[in-house]
Length: 316
Image (cartoon, rainbow, N blue to C red; front, side, top):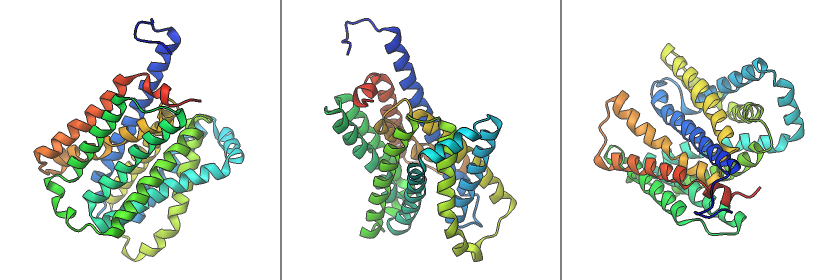
């Protein structure tokens, strides 16, 4: 490893650029995910399960069209034959952590569920990366995780969500913890798979698995389903942008950065939602929400500046 006085080699500069590109891709995915709640607000006539399954199915269809257009269908089937159980596990994880999170919101309120579900993963994955590398995380990485978690708390428990904090119950908290643990485990498995396969085939297969696993729950809500033009447009947006494009960006980014870095970057999702709620829905955020957003962005910027930490914590 080079020290501060050792000139950077072309190889090290390329690696640094790749790590920063990976971080940027995960950040872009998180920003797209942050637009989903705003789009979901337009689907008043659809239950959450139906909307989630619909966007996943549409996203999977778009990804399969892209595999056909890029001539990677054969490569996709080869990957499926090679690693069917791993791909199914990733798809199941995607379906599970979203379902657990929604269930946690119902039982514990949006603020507590969001803080716990999204906050557990960066902590667990930072510890996981450190254990794998057999070294302590750097001070700057721990500070970045701390800033991100503080920002998440401030955004989720800001004045606009304060009413939901009081309804927290143990069942909802437990579901939120399970959601966070499932997200962490899925991220680790997805990163390992992403480094051994092309992003497009992997994303098409795991998204398809997630959609098919959620599909059986849709008939339970058939009596309340009524699709209008606005709902259809919102699902189309979520399927194409927040599923197909976002998950493709995530899996591309996971090839170049650590799982813990990706988990911290994903905390841009609630910050994006908060800002869009102001710009598009006319909501008013408290100063604590704006401070939380700034802290989250600062944490991601610290990860970008840190540079070498990703490679130090992620041995191949």
